[in-house]
Image 1: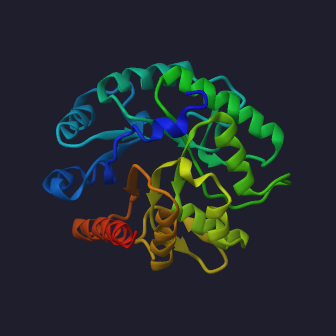
Image 2: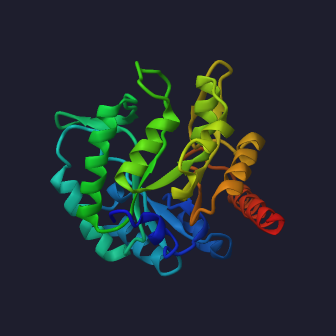
Length: 283
């Protein structure tokens, strides 16, 4: 996309507030179509798959825009991109025609061995340069805007720069977009003792295209990003601070397990929408 990302951002569609397409939620999602604006999928779950799971995706696409969010691209890894994964995603994109694609700012492959986690990266200039090249290559491959997501992390490596500077240098040098996980901002700020508002003020927040908001598990000494709890008030408040600073194209309520009554998820979606509406009126 060269130096045109911010110009092209304005041309991207607005999708409102969505939910992840999980098999446990499929029936309820279809029953509550009026409450949900779009669906997010992990493309890895649909590559080279047929049968019921793929049929449900095709059926859901009749009613909702579908946006892919990757898990296994290993954008920060040193292995070449997995050709089977790349080809599978490209074939899937022919079907869902996504407006953009995102993955995590991490790595999860080492010498062709898959690590079932999102491994954090060292915050240094060498890593920045490596990521910039990989992001540009991903955009060339998929021919859609590429977004990186800020992950949660639970250990501090010997870093040359802080998290905000690291993210800023990557997205600006790669001229890509940002999927900002506001719950991860909160979790990291508590675990690593920094001000989350300062974080928002020190990243190129205007590059935020998509937002994730979720719940977490507070164990006292450490907070864990789980996507299995209700969103807390402080995270809603931080989401409001984000919206004062930028206008994302899509918001996702993340819930991956420990599912409550679907009415509770609808209630969270409505609360997110109410925050958006109140800030829009205030502006």
